[in-house]
Amino acid sequence: MRKLLFLFLNLLKTFRKVGLKLSGKTENDIHASRVISGKAWEEFCDNLKSAGASLMYPGAPRDAFNQAEGLRYLTRLTRGGLEAFVEYADPAFPVLRRMAHETVKLGADNPDNYYFNAQISGKYSYRIRGKRNTVHYIGFFTQNGNYGTTGSMGPCAMLEHRDLKLEDDGSFEIILSKTPAGKNWLKIEEATSMLMVRQTFLNRFTETPSEVTIENIDGRTAPDPITPAMIDEGLKTASMFVAGASLMFTRWAGGYQKHTNQLPLFSPEVSNAAGGDANIIYYHSHWKLADHESLLIEVQPPDCDSWNFQLNNYWMESLDYRYFTICINKASAIYEPDGSVRVTVAHRDPGTPNWINTCGHNEGTMLWRWYRLAAGSEAVEPSCGIIKTTTAL
Image 1 (cartoon, rainbow, N blue to C red):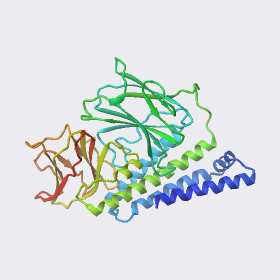
Image 2: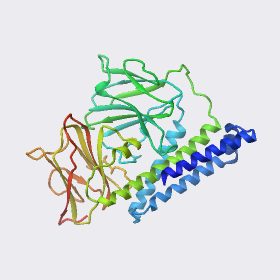
Image 3: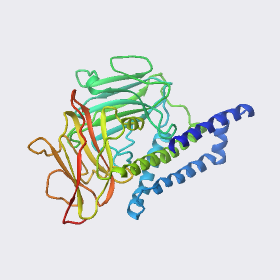
Image 4: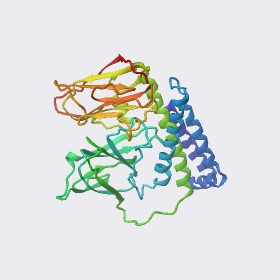
C-alpha cells in the first residue's frame, strides 16, 4: 500500500510537469500560487489528518491508553518532520540534529544510540569535523531517499570508527563527495538526501558522545532567502513523512502479531531499506502479557561487538528509558555461570536479574539486536516463554 501511494504521487508529479510545459508555467510559479492561496497549508493539514488512519490499521489496539499514545506519537512525528524538512531542510547549510531522541521516537529507536541526522544533497560536497571522545561506537551513513518522498531510506555508503583515521588529539575530518577525497571519505550519490550518524553506548551514563559538525564546502557563507518552493515542498514532505512512517511501522507491528511473544529473525532487506544498519541483525516482534504473566527470554550470546534488547509500545516507540529500565545490553546484563543471559519482561520486579519494565503496558513491540558478529560467529535466535506470576499489573 505504501509503495503504491508513493508510485501514485510520482506519477502525479510527472503529469504535472507535462501540464506545466504545455501551459508555459514553471514549478516556481505553481509553488508561489499554492503558498499565496493557502493550498500548501491546507494539503499539509489534510495529509496530517490522513496519518490518523495508521492508528486504526487492522490489529492495532483500540483502547484509550494505546490510542492516546498513538496520538502523542503522531505529534512527535509532526514535530520531527517539521524540524527536518522545513526548519533544517536546506542541504546547502546542513545541521546535524537529533531527529530521534527521548521525546521523538520511531521505528524502535535504540535507547543505546545517540542519533544525528542532517539533510544533504548530491549537488554538494561536505566536510565533517569531530572529536572521537569515549562513546563505544560511531558510524557515519549516507542514505538515499526518505520516508517523506520515496517512502524508504536506501543505504548509500558508511564509514565506521574502526576505519576512521584520527589525529593525535582524537579529532577527525571526513569528506562527503561523489569521488574519493581526503584520508576519511564517505561517498554520496545524486540521490543522497541524508547523513545519519549513529553512536552506540555500552553505558550511556558514563560515556561521552563524539562532537560532530558538518559544513558545505562550496564556499558560500550564508543561506539564500527562503522561497515559496522550499516551504511548499517542506510542508508536503513533512506531512508525508508523518503519514508514511506511521503507516509503515504500524503495518510492521501488525505483522509481528503472527509471532507474538517470540523473537524471529527480521528481514535484512526490509530493515536496510528502512534505514537500518547492515551490520546489525534484528529480531523484531510483538509482545502481549496478561496481568499475571511475564515473558522469559533466554539466549547464549554469540561473539559480537555488542548486543541489546529493548521494549517498545505498539507504535514502535521505545518506552521511557529516562526513568525506567526498558532495555539491556552486553555491558549492563548479568550473566549466568555458563555465559548465557536470562531477561524477564514483567509488570513488576520479579526479584531476578535483568528485569525489563513494561511501564504499565500490556502489549507492544520488542527488538533484540546483535551488533557486528565476529568472524566465524553465527546469529542466535533468542528463546522465549510465558511465565505465570502471582503479582498483577
